Image 1 (tube, protein in one colour):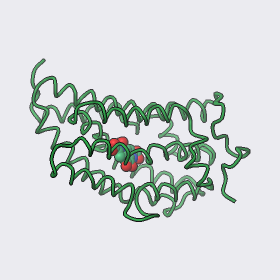
Image 2 (cartoon, protein in one colour):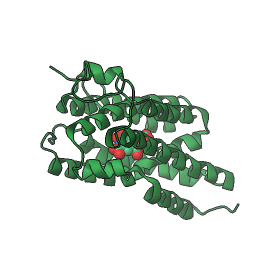
Image 3 (cartoon, protein in one colour):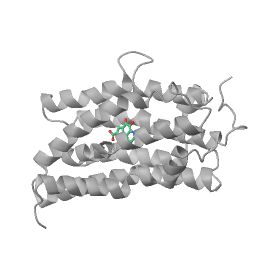
Amino acid sequence: MTVLSPDALEARLREIGAERYHNRHPFHRALHDGALNRMQVQAWALNRYYYQASIPVKDATLLARLPTAELRREWRRRLEDHDGDAPGTGGIARWLKLTDGLGLSRRYVESLEGMLPATGFAVEAYVHFVGERSVLAAIASSLTELFSPTIISERVSGMLRHYNFISEETLAYFAPRLTQAPRDSDFALAYVRANARTPEQQKEVIDALLFKCNVLWSMLDALQHVYMEGHPAPGAFRGDGTPGAFSA
Ligand SMILES: O=C(O)c1cc(C(=O)O)c2c(n1)C(=O)C(=O)c1cc(C(=O)O)[nH]c1-2
């Protein structure tokens, strides 16, 4: 194994994003191209809620492991972005505006009752990864955010264009992410460039990004399997007829 320069390492990470980021998944292509029905969009938002709700748990897990005040100061902003600083503020609350706008009941969404098991396993694997692997790998696993502004822009414009049940207000979650994600990923990328110096460390970083792409991809695989291909999923959200799923 040879050592990569910081630029070569970054180029490798960007190549992974180009090949494996979840913008390439057929479920996302269908979501953004207007090929889904309302129930399929509801299923996406309902499952993705668990990812959103677990991001600050993941960041708090990592925060507790960071060795310096400087690093913790930087990382704690992420908690504030998602949890807000008062009830009704922050990313989780904004995600619930999306599920509200889609007609889902909050109690049902927050209960996770209708979530697919694979969503739970993928999200929990991410939280465990940042608790168990090196701090370098944990920070590197957030680097999918390098690629999220492009998918978010595509998603917002595509969904507004194609779905009459979607409005700018229901997609309010995404607007702040367009500035938060680059700020966060610039920091994580600079950290990785400066701290992954040996071939072993560089492999850890590359593997962390591959792992995270797999987390995001497998959540969409599960949605595709059940909601596009119609395979059975006992207990999962099924649209109209799912007890408690809809707000009055
Ligand atoms: O909409 C998306 O496609 C998307 C992707 C990702 C990502 O790449 O992990 C994140 C988000 N959104 C997001 O909203 C978010 O808060 C977030 C935090 C993280 C992370 O790993 O710390 N990823 C993402």
